[in-house]
Image (cartoon, rainbow, N blue to C red):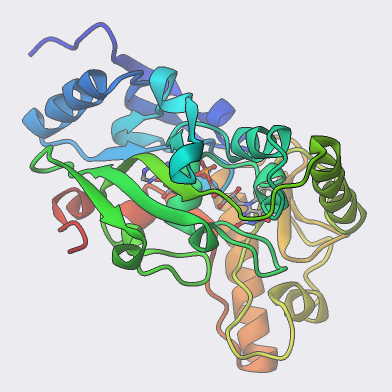
Length: 313
Ligand SMILES: Cc1cc2nc3c(=O)[nH]c(=O)nc-3n(C[C@H](O)[C@H](O)[C@H](O)COP(=O)(O)OP(=O)(O)OC[C@H]3O[C@@H](n4cnc5c(N)ncnc54)[C@H](O)[C@@H]3O)c2cc1C
């Protein structure tokens, strides 16, 4: 069976992950249109290979051993953003950076979505992960519906907000391998006359984060979710379990924020996993709290059987 020219073989993935770690994809494609996505999916299905979608790689740890399947990163038309102001909505392609949507809303003077301007993921990743900030602003607050593609039937379907079962940093999409193609958001009711005021809100949020978060570029942000019902955030427990500054190879728990792991250079995926497991064990032994990972292990968290899981109903 020949490999279509749009599919690359043995493609290195580390540059696609914010933490700068990862082996090669057996097959890689950057589909720019729905026809192209279907072609890539048919290729994966015909070869019975798992298909994994990568957004902007800001929340994944890609295995050094690489991906024995097809990795797709949406590009081209999937990066577009279009306003339907008379309907009070904005539609964003799943490959568009969330920051681009935040900036587009700011330019039009829509306030109340500053968090979108500071989270470094794609629309697709943000919808799946229900990205948001600690200040209670998250995708679920603004999403109306998402168009998804079933990897088995290759059928497209609109899922309404209620179908997506959003909760803290998760959605029903985490239990499927459905691909988000685009998402429709409700425009905020609050519209300031001056876009510069909205940009000022985004800058202020950035500044707050810069003051409290590590400056290192090579990281996936929070490693663990904040434990539900616990008194403190995950970082507090990790810090008090002595994790700050702990190293494993080139990976290190940030000295500024114990819930962040950084790649100081040459870290491998196993180095990071060791730190994650040590942190989880220590917090459990010391505080009886079992932390849940936020970062997605690629491909372990998305086993091949995922390809054949059902879409949400
Ligand atoms: C510096 C830094 C700061 C961060 N701050 C925050 C924060 O404040 N709040 C927050 O919530 N997160 C934060 N994150 C984490 C991350 O940005 C979010 O989780 C983001 O939503 C992930 O999007 P992504 O496109 O990078 O997804 P990826 O990391 O590429 O993938 C994450 C998951 O989404 C899936 N996915 C990606 N695209 C699609 C698609 N089109 N269809 C279906 N599934 C898809 C992937 O398969 C994977 O399972 C931060 C990360 C960094 C590096």
